[in-house]
Image 1 (cartoon, rainbow, N blue to C red):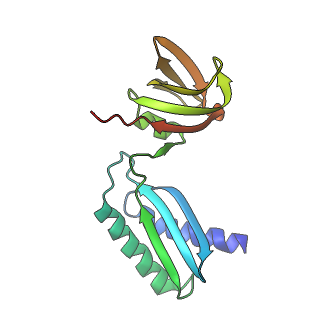
Image 2 (image 1 turned 30 degrees about the vertical axis):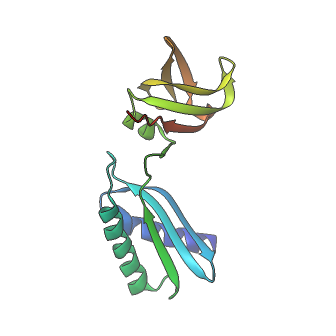
Image 3 (image 1 turned 180 degrees about the horizontal axis):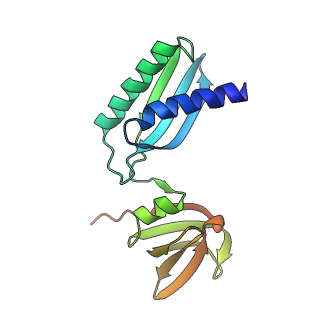
Length: 153
């Protein structure tokens, strides 16, 4: 059953990706007697709109309707990551280079398990964060959660 579910996910993801977006999160799960397909998507450079999500939703719904791979009772939810998008990969962090970010760590760095600062550099394994004039090296393996710090002016 796992390989079938994985196969279904791969097929649905390929339909979504034809719209030029990346799939950030993807789940199929049962709820109230029907399958729910829930996806979070965004363009590589960000900026997906509600209209874009609605268009992708219709495309996935049509695909599921035509193929009947989930049966007849399902819900499709296509969402944008919103302003509070979690930063997970080096690509995510590259998008916010030069901006203020917040990091929650697995293990303390400099006796702190929460850091806020300006993201200075990003490579495959780590990032450099400047806070209060000091630059800290933080490995991705130590980051539990990262978020861009949204400042309202």
